[in-house]
Length: 114
Image 1 (cartoon, rainbow, N blue to C red):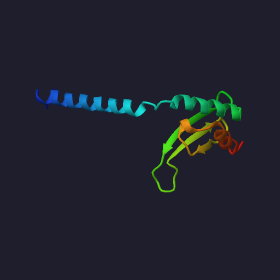
Image 2: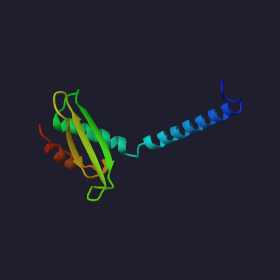
Image 3: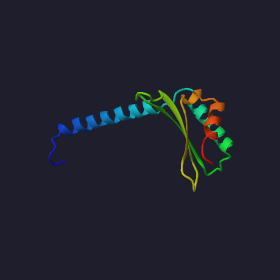
């Protein structure tokens, strides 16, 4: 290789490998779901589809957000419904995903525009 000494190559390669390993560890850590979350998300999606009688081509997204702003709920579950020909419909419940009860979900969904 031009411009690089034989000593510089292994050090650069080692640094790149170390950086890649760090990023992979971070991604694995960040993507590991908490216990009960997958089941709760599936339950919320199924109930949303049932309550709103959604077609199979509609997308239901369930997300949990944490807020540290004053006056903002600590944790909020966001249910977004995306259907062809309609704008997104968004329901919010001020609880963590596994804590959402079906009565609360039904109430939040009933407040959405048709």
